Amino acid sequence: MEQKHDAIKGYKEDYLTLQKTWRKESEELFLVGKLAYWTYWLSYYAANKSEEKREELFAIKRKGMQLLSQSQYTQLRKYIPGFSNKLCYRHYGMMKRKNVNVHHFLNRNQELLQACENCKKREEHFYTLYSLAVLDQYGEKDKRPLFIMYIPYDLMKGIFPALETLESVKVYKKREFGKIRVDGKQNWNLEPVFSIKLIKKKFEQSYEALQNYFEHAESKVRETAN
Image (cartoon, rainbow, N blue to C red; front, side, top):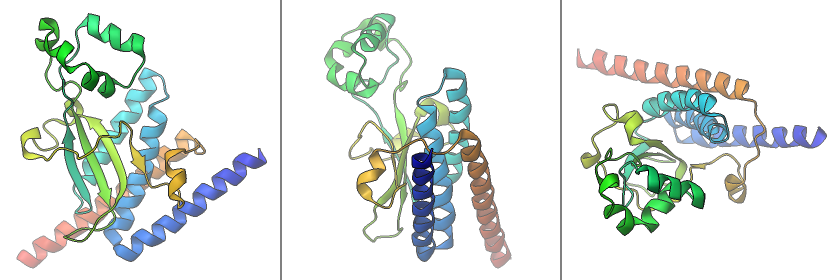
């Protein structure tokens, strides 16, 4: 119990340190960073939940990514695997038996899948992803990612820009990234220290704060124009 308490304390201290860094850059990054932080935790937990709970958490993630995409500190790209159609039952079963990352399977078996008439007839871009990166600066300076999150194309088509208007990701690491710990080495091996209830509460608070910021900024632009 004491060990978990110490872990939670460490995460909270790092979160406060990160917020101070974001605020030094700008008020917008401060608010964007906080929403991205809790959106990332939602996604992290969703991966290990039942299908029903996962759908609920991904619906909240979708809402968060949509608002984050309005910021000048975010960069939206696409990831289209070598074969992105929905797999036929036979090849889907093969993938499940191999128990490998879906995009790893698609890229390793491109020729096999492209030769399958049943796979070729199925839904296009079923495995295509949108990639949303939150960057520590904007403009022409050297920028570093603070968060990199993915969401299926099918969930955001019609909301995010059309695929043909976006650049492709340079590298797809098959998992998301979140700047959660101050020590960079710890950002890939996180512990589930926060409760879902707390994460959802913090998400909603951060979402409302960033939404109000954007609405206020838009209002100021309209006033200036008039």
